[in-house]
Each structure stands twice: as C-alpha cells, then as structure tokens.
Amino acid sequence: MATPSSLLLSSPVDVLAAVPYLLGFHPADSLVVIGLTGDPPRGQVCVTTRWDLPIEPGVAAQLVPLTRREQVTQIVLVGYGPGARVTPAVDEIRALAETAGLRVIEALRVERGRFWSYVCARAECCPAEGTPYDPAASPVPAQATLNGMVALRDRAALERSAAPLSDTAREAMREATARAIDEMGRRVRACRDADGFAAAFVADGLARVRAAIETYQEGRRLCDDDVARLGLALAVIRIRDEAWTLIDDPSLRTHLALWGDLTRRLEPRFVPPAAALLGLSAWRDGDCALAGIALERALAADPGYSMANLLMHALHHFLSPGMLAERMPGPADLDEAMGSARMSWLLPMISILDEEATVPG
Image 1 (cartoon, rainbow, N blue to C red):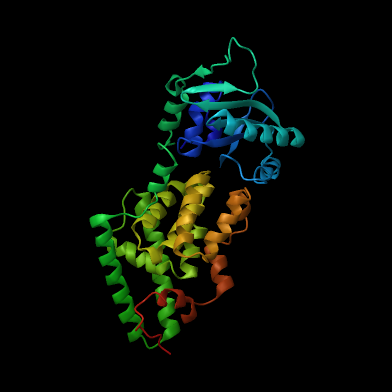
Image 2: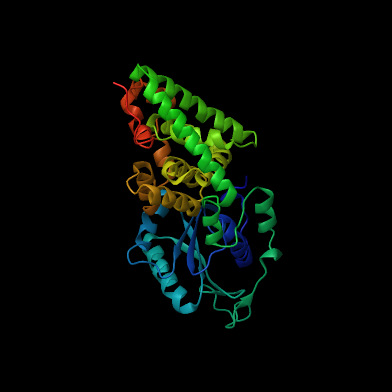
C-alpha cells in the first residue's frame, strides 16, 4: 500500500490530485492541512487533517501541538469553496504557522475546477480568474491507485462504506443473530459451573477472533452465523481487547476489511465493539475520516462505550496512534493482568440475551 510519504508532490496540480487519496474522499467546503517533515523545498508528507468550513473557534489551535509532536517543518493548505469561506480559515492557519515557526510552502483555494494561490501573486502563473486544472494530468492518481489508495466521491460515500446493510442481507443477519442469542441463552441456562462456563466461552471467543483475522487475511469473509457469534463474543471486554492487541501496521488491511464488514453486518446492539475496532484500524492507517465515522457509529449505538469515547478524544486532540499503541499490552499481558476468566466478565454479553435468561449461581 502507498503511504502518504510515497506520493511525490511537485506542483499545485500534484497537491490537488493527492488530497482526495490522502483523505480517502473528495472534499467540499473544507480546509485541508498537509504537514511535511524535512527541509524546504523537499519534504515527506507525515500528517493530513481536514476541517469543515467555517472552522469552529479554537479548533485550529490544536494544529500547533500536532505539528510539534509529528516534527512537521512545512505545511500546505488547500481550501475548498468560495473565497468568503476559505480565506478567513487560510489566514487563521497561516497566522498560527507563523507563530509556530512553520513554513507555509503553498496555500490554495479550489472552486469549480480552478485554483488560486495565496502564496504566489504573479499574474503569469496565478491569474486573477484562477487556473484550471485536471488531476488526471498528474501522475499522483495512478500512483496512489496502483498502491491501494482510494478516493471516494465525497464524505457521504465514505459514510456509506460503514453504513448498515439493508434489505435481504439485513434480514438474513437479523435471523442469524436471533439464532445466536437463542443458542447462547440455552447454554447459559443449562450450565452448572459459572466460572468454568466463562473460561470456555472466553477461550472460544479468543479463538474466533484469531480465526476471523485469518479468514479475512485470506480474502474470504465470515458467514452470517459466524458473524453473529463473533458479535456476541466481542461484547466481552477480554475478547474485544484480544482483537485490539492484534491490530498492528502490517495487518491493517486485514483488520479494516474484517471490522468494516462486521460494522456493516451486525445488528445495532452488537455494533460498538466492531465499530470501535474499525475506528482504531482506520486511525492507525492514517484515515481519520473513516475512523471518525466508525466511532460515530459505535457511539450512536452506545454513547457510553468507553473504547469509542477514548479513541474519539484522541482524534479530536490530534493524538498520534503510536502514543496509544506503545501503551497497549499484548495478549499475554492481558492474561497476567486480568487473571482467570470469571462469570462476571460475561455480564455485558448476558445483558443482551433474552430477558428471561438467568445467570447460573
């Protein structure tokens, strides 16, 4: 997969061609900030962020600690929309950049297939009527596509990529979920050793997580019944955290596919763990837009879901995924910290079973 730093941005057209791939969609009414490391005039893209216009008061100030933390030395600004909306935002960011000692190497406004530069005032290259451009004239789209980067039509298209399935697929998943709930309810009511049952359930859930990762790594997908059973298992924090610890940079494509599929297919009450894991995977992949959309789905289903709230806080404060990854324990650490499985671990899962289900003594 191409990384942002692998895209060569040598002209305004290259920048404008790259932005949709850096964000994952074609922006509108937005201000995009591309941060680069290295010495002018060359640099490597290390961070990209976007705000809706107009920018909310005080939000842009968070850019300064972000650039310092990521060792950004140069930035490129691209505003999408009419001058009355874009120019105040560009002026605000340029003032912040000057205060932080950052060089603004380019600042562009884009509207209706033309761009204007706030940096260049020469009429021969930046006329008052704007400069028409064609992204296809840049090698960036071909390079990005060849290496697995995508640019959806707009943010709504990105939202649809994580939206629930509908029609016959939704009904089939609903039936599979009912079967999983009924099966688990019967097992809970029949068990006589509560902690023994919990240990077996957690062990099975951990195995399901690893098997699901392997399935999507091979380019396959789970059947509805296995999705429903995994969704039920992920309600147990220890099982969800197993998945969390297994998300690393080499496996991001697999995790994006797996948790994206589950986020779309699971019934609403089972969505938060899968959507939070999708948000984490997207965040680590540098796709903050998809991360935000996934976390919004998790919080819409459960506003108090702690993992989603933690990650949303990190996104809003432009924290680096590496900061959280460095603090995450491994599976063995989880076992040592949490000890042996207990029936109390299963209470979040049991709470979504049939109301008539009883927890054995």
